[in-house]
Image (cartoon, rainbow, N blue to C red; front, top):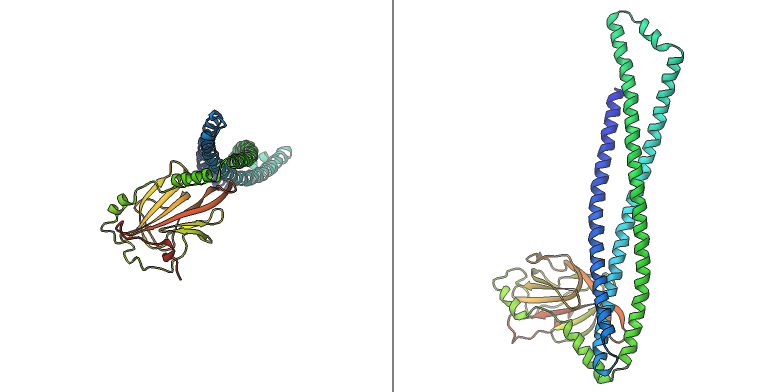
Length: 378
């Protein structure tokens, strides 16, 4: 019975080790992917910095410098977010690894105590000659054979406990090594995060100083140029072709109103025809205004943010400047279903980061104009 118990315990340890290894591999994959994201963002920032330094400080290049600085501020903010996500992954991995190490250490201490008691008992039996007494007090040859088997099983039990202790010791050592590496990685990410925060403040101040050199007309020209860069990258006319025959959300019409804003907790900063600029909190959820089907998801090559297009029957709603997306092309979405997270953007007046969504609503034909404000009328 005791031997079966120890074998079960060994199998349990092996099971725990397998689970630990599987979780560690999954977390390692996520951490490695986040490292690649950070490396790509750092590369992009370095390229922009190189281009900024190449520009001469004169009127003809000032607008270009501001444009690059604005993009760099946005990219550096994305880098900060990526570092924060990396910190979160490492924090969770450190907590999990520390918990595993504590549990394994506790098991190891118990096994050592049990093995010590077994050894002490064996030594007492040896000193008192109990083994010989035990054998020679057998009733017959069969009884003696049975007692020899029991003694051998006791010896095997001790060997199994030694093997379990060795296995647990290795597990504890490997887990503590992993914990040390994770802690070093976390410290490195924290240092990088602090450095990037300082660089972001420096970039914002540089951009503000550069904008002051521009005239009012030049500033407006720059705003218009940056606004054009943030516009939707896919022609709505091309997307209209994909809405033909779509039945999802077909009850939507130009008279549909009293809908929720697509930014949870957001407020409309301005309406401009079929477009609405909606600001919200950091990590605010973006929701579909109506049931429908995801027509397309594009990554804006300028802002590096996502644009999502949803068909409601033959009407189209667009959601630009998402930092991440929770749906895929072709998915059916419900009214008020989460489709992603609001993205960051640079406020050209203050050169500070803000979080906004550019929403659009389009009719089946170009000659029918819709107002975004009508969708949200009460």
